Amino acid sequence: MAELVTIARPYAEAVFRIALENKALAAWSERLSLLSSIAEDGQMRLCIGNPELSASQKSDLFKSVIGRALEGSEANLIDVLAASERLSVLPEIASLFEAQRSAQEGVKEATIYSAFPLDEEQRKALIGDLEVRFKTRLTAEVVVDKKLIGGVKIVVGDQVLDTSVSGKLESLRLALKN
Picture 1: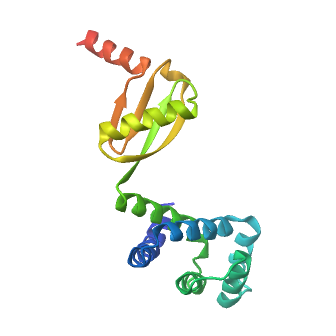
Picture 2: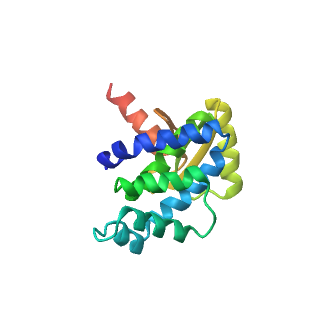
Picture 3: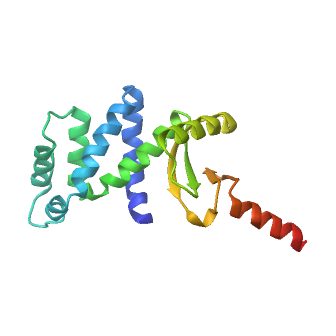
């Protein structure tokens, strides 16, 4: 996995620079998402890995699956990746691009561990409160963790906010132990 990220990083950085120069971060997010899903398709993976197909054949096949006209830099990306036998790293390129985009836009990712499922209204209210507390925009993933007993545990970057019952019990246990 680390090797794929190492291979994908220069491509993701190059695409990010192009998107930033053209003020097209959202458009490139959509493009990379589509390209990534095509690269992850089982039949496409077989074609990408087929040594009997030339780089131009793989590139043409990949472009034909997209189903729309390609922008020049998008077509160039596919050509370059096909020529260097790296079409399979498109999912990692997309992931790295999204991380750079989030950093550029000042958006941080949060993971909310909750003892119970949150409905959409609760989720929005909690994210709103967290954005004020952390002074940044957040995108959040909610994970149900029954071990928390009640409450939530929030992870934003390297910061952890634990208001769960199990977290409070652990704090109490440590306080009593000392």
